[in-house]
Length: 303
Image 1 (tube, rainbow, N blue to C red):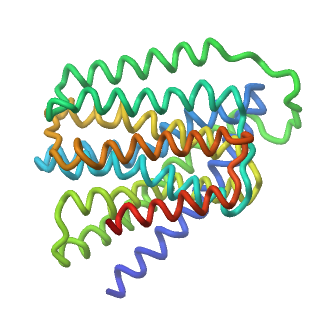
Image 2 (cartoon, rainbow, N blue to C red):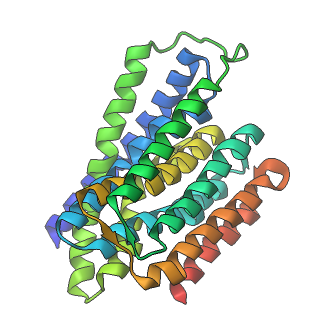
């Protein structure tokens, strides 16, 4: 037990510093590229913090445990919205960029529906995976081409391009490593307590793989950088529903249990829609709305 506690402390330290470095790096990159931090966070934080989900899903498929792979993705998307985004909103109300919510928020919802559609026959095949990955790459290409260079972004000159990239790189190493030490010990404990693969995937693994997003979003909320939070959460969920499930299905076709099709994926879609409605209301996520989201997350697992 002492060794597990030491690993837990080390993981928390990596998550703390990793979140700080990622927020600094994203803000610096947005400044150097003269684009909105939301878009940089969508790509850098969204893709980077989805790496743990990708590794966990691929490992689960190599171990022939599709319930953990699917539970990891679905549970992580629910946790990102109702837990991570809600915690950030409790720290400080979040101002929402209308264009980002309209474009990237819609992409998150469409991605969730597309994931459900491809899984509806009970499996995600390699052809389904190719469709999801191609859709994601097409969206990213079109989104990048639609960006306009912003003249209202002040060039402070505090950080060059390389230091910003280095901070992002260090953060994207520290965050998954920090999350990994937590997941390993938590999964082992949950297994000894007799939890099923689906429950482990939906709770311990999903929350554990959401720790990078949580660490980065808490750091951003403390600095009142709501654009980084919004971009990171939207990006992570879009990547999870396309590249992560696609990567798992490329390893082996992913069998999707009825419990996911009939309950958990619909819950994920409803959580997505409810979150978008809250974000759309006055284009601000208030502490009251964040509290409702957090209570909803607790209620889901109390059912």
